[in-house]
Image (tube, rainbow, N blue to C red; front, side):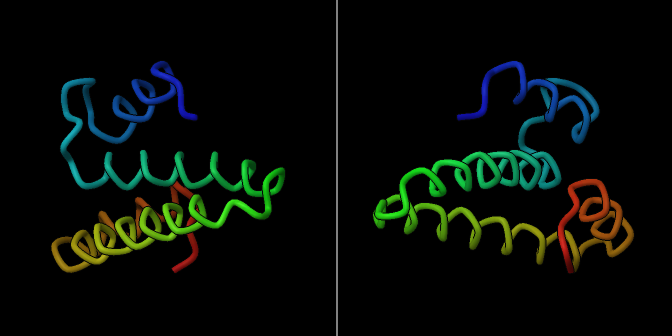
Length: 88
């Protein structure tokens, strides 16, 4: 689980300040942190199928947000995926 301190750090890094939590880039970064955290959970619990469904929902939500960012501003999209280490 992503701690409060980690969330605040991500929000300030991608949103500019700690109050800018609704920005698309911030949402993608937070989803990426949750997805990376859940990957460790599934290594320890491979039979957690309900959790895998939730993971797939998070991945789909992140994909939709990235598509929105890409359609709005391609340079911001490229910078974001480079910072997060996502392949696209």
